[in-house]
Length: 507
Image (cartoon, rainbow, N blue to C red):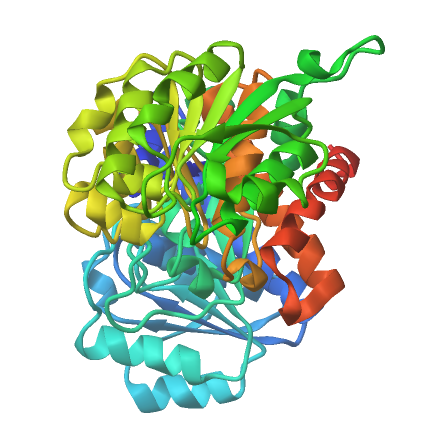
């Protein structure tokens, strides 16, 4: 896992490191050197190249001063453009401005024309305008400087986070620097990992500037292949089908027969050894023709062809002999089916994943989800989240944590950069995915993938973040093979390849 820090955590890390005896000046020196090194890498060397370093106030500007000094000493022709009176800088930024003056580097006060002329001649530009604590919309000359950088035809290196991106929520309310590379100190920041901020960060390079490893928070992280491999159970040589986990899938209706097929197939491809599918009696024959390795339970149904409350006893009997449950996709919002779902959730004692119409059964009554016996993984997209919680939340990390905290369940907020959150506040951000996943049924595949992992004994939080990772990776693999014609079934079939790709990734 790669740690991801909020701006407040970054400030506290700075303070804790300095309390260990590491001077703020030393941290700034290492930060500026790392940014300078990144600039030299981008330009293929330093001697004779030209750099423009645009500096704001505070420590971010100070990092820029250090960057400029190192680049000048390595032979680059450097111009520093400042957005406030340099005399107003405070230590350690002020001290580094004085040291910069000793190198003969030109320091120019910002105006759009000056910045434009300098950038026209540059080989690389550095964004040291705003730090990770920025919120809101850049105005006046600050916005003009960002526009000037974005108009330049040179690579841009951002210091810790692109200026204009909210370091907490990743929101961009006005203009923001579109960096080619962001040099992150100690750990990536939330605003550069979540969307839309990640689209402005370019590649994120995490550099060590002297923070002790034990002080870097690990509450939030970016999932890596090794994390996934570490939680995947191994199959014993003498294993039988039930030793690999039994999953009960309750899904589908007369209008939506495809959902149950996708959930079941994904669970099987994720390695669940025994999958039992419980569906309304009228669609049993349709589903059976495509799920040839699956055991079936026909259920009592409503006039609309949805699961009826009378089916509860049969499903509960199956669940009692299983390791996990996947519930919800394609079940509709029929009132009687809603009653069935809520009754099953309340009494279910095995871990379960609840998605789609399973979540819709709790519209406006999210607190009722806490009334249950088993561990739960909730997998809403933004629309389902809004119906559950009564409002959209632009901060995806905060939203997932809020849902997890209010339900005492694992919450997986789906979308680009899916976020998994545990009730204790721990969270994982998923880096995998592909535009081909924006097609009907891929959410059902994710439900099956998580259900399969739960059945194999994986902890609910780990099942959520690893399932999201493998689902996204399967989408990438399927997209390469099928292109824009990729459908959800293709993604399910690629799950074994995704697992093998994760296992093969260098660690």
